[in-house]
Figure 1 (spheres, rainbow, N blue to C red):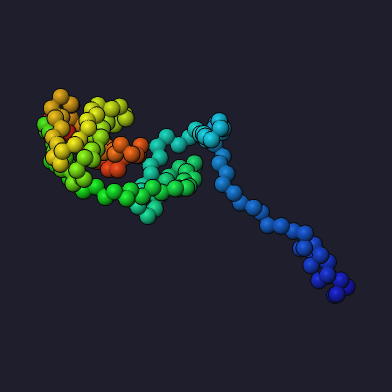
Figure 2 (cartoon, helix red, strand yellow):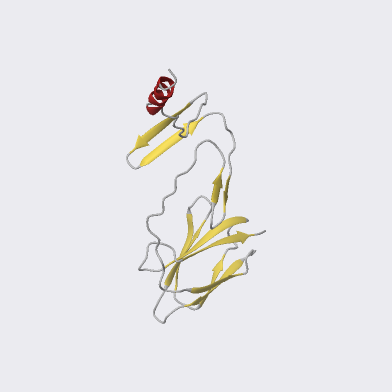
Length: 161
């Protein structure tokens, strides 16, 4: 009997598995919808969540956590020397560019909803953008080269008064 009990105990433990814990959510309502490359997960019960980011880490609150995968990072070989001033501004912004002769940059000014408010082709080393017609708020200034569709520089412009 003494030898049989350890063998019986060992035999029962061989087939036993521990539980597998995965991300689960118990909420009063919610769902998942998939359409091609996009998946939308939603749940009811958490009215406010925040995301805190630094260049090294991103912390998100809430039940649903983003799975961010960076597959390609474009390096911009052309090093643009750009200065944008004054910022914040009340009437105009000056752009100073160190660019090669014959090269130009496309400047786009967007509002926070992403609507294009101004598009200018900049061929000079110094260009002024008139912002007097715009209301006070935050605007996005993007600089693009004709060879790239991606912006080579992006600035947040604060318009006051």
